[in-house]
Image 1: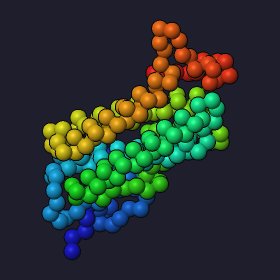
Image 2: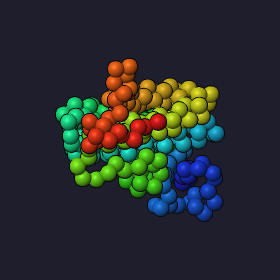
Image 3: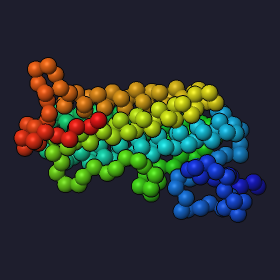
Amino acid sequence: MRLPLFVAACLVAAPAAAQSQQASGSFPQNSVSDRDHGGPRGEAQRASIAALQQTLTELQQLQLQTKQAHWNVSGTLFYPLHELLQEHYEGVGKYADEVAERLLAIGASADGRANTIVRTSRVPEITGGFIDDGQVIVWFARNYRVVSDEVGQGIKATEDGDPTTSNLLQEVQHAIDKYQWQMRAMIQPTPTDQNTGAPLNGGQPLPMAK
């Protein structure tokens, strides 16, 4: 029986000996099925696996940090942020599931292990303890943009070889950009209010996400 091939994060072929067994210390780890499956083959498949897996990792990271902020946000905007973060948590979770299922549909496993998130996510953890409402707004405005940029790279990498995956990633980016706007709007300057966030930050302007 032929053993499955394990695709490394960098998608560079591993040595034959490494391919013959499951490397538990490899993060992420995407097994590729040797059975017939839908979706692309060859280089196009490898590009789709890389784009989908990185997106899955970032969506899972966002889920964790969103729930952390949902529980611990404090300050004047506690209630609206508490409610908005729950909405974002559910939306991000929905897309994480769809991205994982697309990985399976194109013949690869999905790696949702905690160590994969810790070792490969480009999104940092939000601070622990009670979190000021201004901090929450700036953190999410900044890191939603980070994830959107990453997903955008995946869209470009898959648009020719796997348009179905590219379309799914466009849906993900659309949602993340919407969530970013919903945070950014709370610190958006207007002609009648510079909206520096000072009332949420002890009278000091917030470090704005740019």
